[in-house]
Length: 547
Ligand code: G1P
Ligand code: ZN
Image 1 (cartoon, helix red, strand yellow):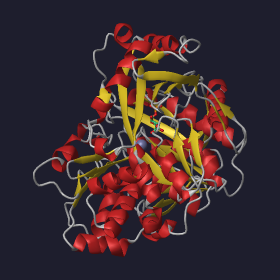
Image 2 (cartoon, rainbow, N blue to C red):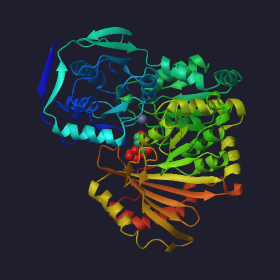
Image 3 (cartoon, helix red, strand yellow):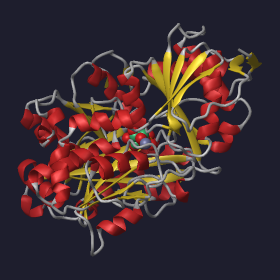
Image 4 (cartoon, rainbow, N blue to C red):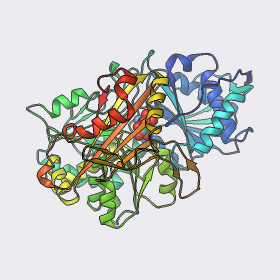
């Protein structure tokens, strides 16, 4: 093997955020940048030595620009670091949940996933990389902190000189003594889905004329959705739109929300809308669920899935518990209470669910940011949520909207919205947070019209399994009637700072469940403005994105 030890100058900006390291493509292309971070991963997980014998890794990405080049570099570095075997998705493709599935199924020591999730791709877009541990989930903070520390003190990286691996052909190859297996990126994942859901019932539903539209947004889920939705459950060809993954996602923004999935939204709110619509993001872990002319908030989606868990064969024996991120609405808490199972409130980011799932304490997890999933893998899983909904619809034979109205009638409705202010100067965003926090001593007990502040705090979380403490996870203002406002800075943006304001109110009366969320939350929105001095501080008249 032609091993090279290359002198490296450390970078000091390689701190992984909520979901790995994300930067502009050009940054990743700059000399040594990717190599430095990858070596930091290897030094951390292999303790500054060569990989233990027999170590197997999974490698794949969402297919965005620079995916293939990065895969070839990482393969050559893995060989140089003594990795025995790498399972890589054909074409360098693996959706994030599929990577998690493959890590778990083949019991590898972890995997490297190349993705900047829902961020735009292409030469001017974003790239990203993250390490997942052997449980299939994102590395916990203890490990990402160690990777960051290693990235700042590296003096060398290891790579071999070798020709690239033929990523497009399934098969086994050797690379400098390391074995590389190019695998079908879809099959293991599709089999797992088939083991969890009632495909026969869904096929029957579709056979009866039920129509669906899945928007893969030219991102990684195209091949997965075509195999599962069109081939295995029999949706007519064309039910999957934008199904060919493109390096720049067709110049779109592969984020399944009402703003960016506008093509799907137009279809679902149009005259000939099908019965069910869904979309997934760049790397396949997010999902948006739509009925005919109807949007299901991710917080409600988690609650509905939990309330209907028994309808899916994989969950028919009951669930252990539910976990949701702090800013996610408390709709799932109400279901957990009724089911008599625990509900955990964690900081933002899927990695906080890992310990709870590993310990068997929770089955379902969800985030308001279009993330839903279960302990079948250790990532959120877009197509899993879509299939869960199809399973529910196949068994209940009601329109999506009707499922929600019946759910709210039973549990009450947590009216919810998130307002994002993107690309703010970092000092301005920090100023807004400081402004809010500065009032924490005086806010409790004070009133804004009908709303009386009950508590405020900066959310912190002690992991019930390993005792680790995560603080500074978002500023909460809670009111006497159960409503709340949360202020939080995004950890995934790559341009300036993004401020997120989460608004939630509870409505028990079914006569008032059909209200428009922005109207119902108007008073809370005004309070948020006032407390944070948002307008004068940011100069913004409106949020960039309202969900
Ligand atoms: C966002 C979401 C968060 C999610 C993360 C990764 O992070 O808010 O729930 O886990 O993307 O998909 P944020 O930008 O808010 O830090
Ligand atoms: Zn994603």
